Image 1: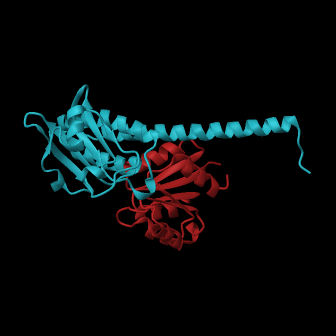
Image 2: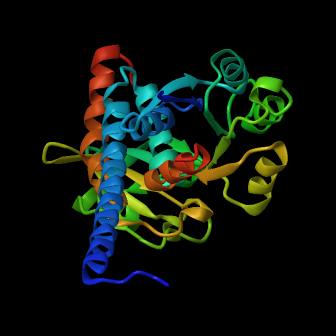
Image 3: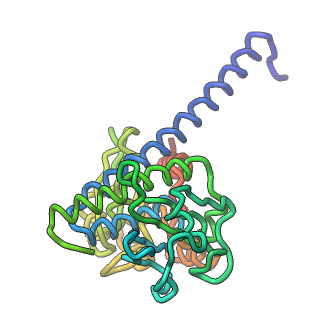
Length: 187
Length: 122
């Protein structure tokens, strides 16, 4: 026969509450670890190609996508220049005008575009974009990162993914700039 | 006595994430960066558990898992496969090669820790 008493009920409730808090803390540690790893990977690279390799690993291992395109703004000519792709064909982005389409609009406005359900449709199209992030150095938008389809098991974007996007928005361009200055190499 | 976990992944980022998750727990962590290295280190270091990425250079995780199951000293060592491919046939391939469990990338920290504790009997 089960033992019941107010004290036992209280103890069980307290145990459930502490378990819940422990799991929440573990999730928070995991989310913070992801942010730490992303910053460390980007700023640990001393050559532009290594920054892009780090970005590829971050997109695959932390965001859950194998497709992205990285652009730099060329305001003098009114377009943005593709500097790297992964998993999507480069020819799709030969001419991206500032202010045109999702990528060009993000370059112009500096406002991120996020589709929490993940992009769908033909790879490289506007419909296939999951997130399009302005890349900043200080207050200036110097480029754009477009992330396309999510991996099938990823499902949807969660709040920690949005934190990671903010971090990428703030750190990719400075990491690239530092790597260029340090190595003397262009992308 | 602290338990020892072998992490095998060619991605520096993935290794950093897994290390960051595990070092807060009472485990010693050793690292391999390809499948061949993982088999060697498992034989030499006798880890209590192995976390094995599928896509690695020189020898992939499936083959490393298969070989580890044929070696006397690692035959019963718990193996968690890590894969960016969560489709059922990929998961089945892992189990066919002898893994005990699997997680998909992006790694969910609490999920990985729960599976580690479960396989270590904690």
